[in-house]
Amino acid sequence: MRIIRMLSRKRRRGTVSILGTIIFIGILFSSVIPMYLVMRQADTIYESKMLEVKRLDDERDREEIELYAYPASITEPDWLNLTVNNVCELEVKLERVWINNESYPLSATIESMRSVDIGSFNIEGENGSSYVVKTVSSRGNVYESETGALFYNGGEWESETLGFNLIFPSRPGRGNRQNNWLNELRVTIEQGGEIIYNNATMHWAISASEEFFEVGSPGGYRVVVFIWCKPPPYQHWEKIFDQTLTIEWPDGPAIVEINFEIDGNQLVLQ
Amino acid sequence: MNPRRHKRKGVSPVIATVILSAVVITIGGALWSYTQSATTVIANDYIDGVMELMKMALERFTVEYVCNNSDGTVLHVWIYNYGDVNVTADVYAFVGNQTYSTDFNDPYSIPSGVLGCANVTVSTLNNGDEVAIKVHSRRQNNAYHTYVVP
Image (cartoon, rainbow over all chains, first blue to last red; front, side, top):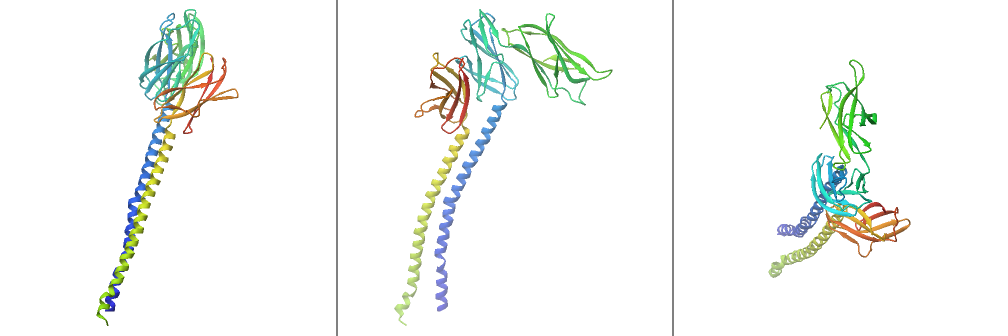
């Protein structure tokens, strides 16, 4: 009899503990764990947004374009033409153009390494005025015209800068060369027999090189490029480009981009 | 032995168990309810904090253009919000040792993707004056620009 009573008491002894455990587990699963999961979710969203914004910042840093502003003609005061060269590996979307204090909405997308005329803008130019042209990309970068301010004086346009930007492609390295070229170049630029640059030296990097040569006025210029060559039979200078190039400003950009490519033992225009 | 007394012998442990269970369920239920409310509040606060931090980090704006009116008494500061969140900012202009700003009680708001113009009233600006401009958002981000009066 006594044994039976003890057994039945023992059977009831765990009821409260079981209830307590159930409540504890209930709290754990219905409150604490969901809270933890929600917090983890918020952290995950935050981290993914941070990654996204870091990528956008990186793209913003790498974005690069060249803006060229030039009048429709040398005596036409009312219209400015804009050309944009995208010189980076990203697609660039332009949002606005600023010409002095006036903004003009724009929606132009320029693919990587492309050049696009983004249109003519009516400015109603006045004698004695200067015009600063800027454009803004969707990534928040502001670019000013490479040619600086434009001046309209005495019924004619003037630019701050005129010149050629010579862009050489990547140079074949050792083991891949089809010629005797080394890495030193000499550039001569002349106009009508007058030498503007005489054997200006520049280094041609393996990765590509670029050099700007400023000139005084628009027109045709003879551009001659020599390269230093290794033997045989001895080290010597060899002419690899000789052509007349024209700055058509104001009917074209004030800075002319000359992109070369290698064709055997010569440089040719792209 | 009294047979009546013998019959009621198992009643009191049962009642004790029922009472103890009731107490455990009541206290446990209250604790459960409290924990649920507390964790909900904590989770919501945490999410709000993370979202606010995220907005702070996502804020992107730049001073796109600056000009002044003809008599040089007002600076027009064009701010482009190229980020994903709306920006509320104060604009400061430092000329010499003077500081000017927009109204602190009425900060300038720029929705996402929009170009806005904030006007700062200054003492008369002269040609060649250099003005340092600082746009300070209410989320503590800054954008700077230097403007030379043409």
